[in-house]
Length: 358
Image (cartoon, rainbow, N blue to C red):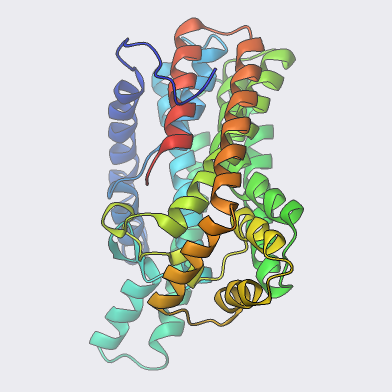
């Protein structure tokens, strides 16, 4: 089954869930708007500015897939935690990557730094911006725990969910550290790049949210195994698509500068494949390494590297691997004994994840 083949024309229930989730997010943040207002305001602005809401959506359909029905309102409130966790990751990631924008707006650390400069405060504006943004991310992480434990879940459901929740937080942070190490060590192996993708994105974007939702519903071990296998493969495919968007995406759609991943020197599977295929071509090797290591990449270099990635066949290789992962993920889903409507929506979600443009 190819994800490029349309699923049937039944209306999707994913958007119905999105309405419920956005209401829960507004309620959760409104109840905390007077707590740490200087830090919570940018957190609230970032969360409510948009986003794909993909993590709570996968958690919801993991819950539905495993037969979840009762206490739906509490489950919606619980998966707000995933959007808070994502906010933490985005804010900290922007500091580490020195990203100036997020979703078409100044990133949190840049906003704090600009305020510092405008008000002519003492010491370094950049240090203040970075420090304040780290605290915003920390607050988002604390509130993620709050959202889960105060959602009104039965104690036994919360206990089942706590294992995947703990694992997800740790895997996200571990993946981010491996990403930092890749740059520091000039890591070029495809194996390392894929491991980073599996931990930093696949686990906490798809696999663990599904696991969390299934655990809330009391899923059996076989169902959890199938959903996690689907989640792992679709999650890695999601990251590979993200890598392509980070290089070739339209800035008017992504809200990020053209070729931002190239400007940041990210050690992605796409770049690992290109470096491997450029062996024996010193000029190509020099261009790729200049992009990865120079710290300042011109528009011309971005265009040259993008052309080289296509010429070397690295883009085609990544596209092919996305399709392989999509197929294996759907095969795992097919093996699962789950609710038919949830299966249908999980196929839709997989298709969105691997064919998206933002």
